[in-house]
Amino acid sequence: MTASDLLGFVRMHLDQGTAPDGTQVLSATGVEAMRERQVELPLLSGMGSAWGLGWELFDTPQGTVVAHDGGTIGQAAFLRVVPEQGLAIALLTNGGEVFGLFNATVAHLLEELGGVRLPDRPTPPAAPAEVDVARFLGRYADTIYDIEVTEDGASGLVLQRTPKDIIAEIGEQPMRFSLVHLDGDSFISAEPVRGIHVVFTFIGEADGKAKYVHYGRVVARAD
Image 1 (cartoon, rainbow, N blue to C red):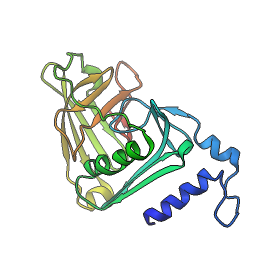
Image 2 (tube, rainbow, N blue to C red):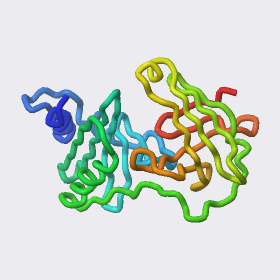
Image 3 (cartoon, rainbow, N blue to C red):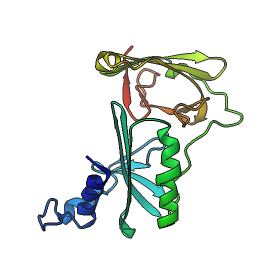
């Protein structure tokens, strides 16, 4: 799929579900329903405030920006749409500092063409608060990663993410994140990773322990 193909998909949504040849791909009601808030998101790195049906929703002072990002082996894609203005920007990448490129192109063009400023990505506080980290410690796992969270000093965390199965087979290496407290049950990497500080939010509770760690993927406790 090219960027032009992706923007053609957006055009269908902006035209109330109608394709250029007049085919009704989606009902107008369905198009609107996809942009309605379905799930509120915790504080995460560069993600929206909520999910609709397939669409990610960013709250800005200028209104809602509709979005969807994706990544696969060797490729990352970004899409931002301002429905009220008929404005859509697609960025497809195949390497490099993709988040820096996003800021220099997509975020810049949204502000220049639409007057829309996306929320700033979180950064570590100058003086992180001291918190009790005991309930966040332990092991979490999904189908492609094992995650081990250990204590680092008085109130920091170390998160070790180890790939497995197909992700390990294609050569992805383990990653170690040194985390400091950001807000509530959210921690942020002290150093940038590929151009951004990654936020990990712990959610849910059972037997005094967090049930999941969320960083765009939701990974369940495994101990």
